[in-house]
Amino acid sequence: MEQSILLQAQDLTKYFPVTKGLVLQKTVGWVQAVDHVNFAIPRGKTLSLVGESGCGKTTTAKLILRLEQPTTGQITLDGLDVHTIDGDDLKQYHTDVSAVFQDPWSSLSPRMRVRDIISEALVVNQKVSKNEAYDRVDELLVQVG
Image 1 (cartoon, helix red, strand yellow):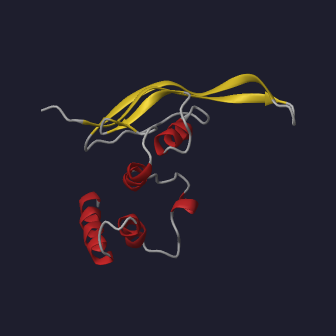
Image 2 (cartoon, helix red, strand yellow; image 1 turned 90 degrees about the horizontal axis):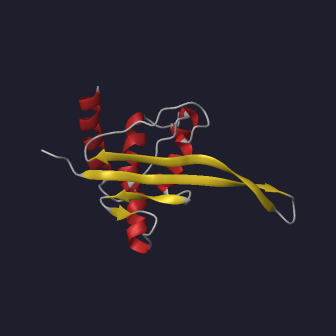
């Protein structure tokens, strides 16, 4: 049985300009942060971006999150081009797609329990009540150990 593609990147490219001058800036070159990246994540599966420092992992994540615009290429979520959506669709996209940052000091608050941290997105995005979120988090924590 073939699984449907949830998230896909096709020919994803991001170049940043290298400029010269303070007032009258002139582009003198380009940094190729992400260069023709392709991947497809089937529903229910995960993908890890692994590589050396400076290879484009964070830029790729920023493109997926719409924190950066691609130079070329396309990212689709359930077949919808994420860089063309706006209004309520964009709000829903930001509800559905989020990131857990690599740095634990900026991702995890020592003042909060893990259960509260995990359930926060469900409650903030008004998906479920706090008690329902706790129940779901408890189920998930049992599954992953």
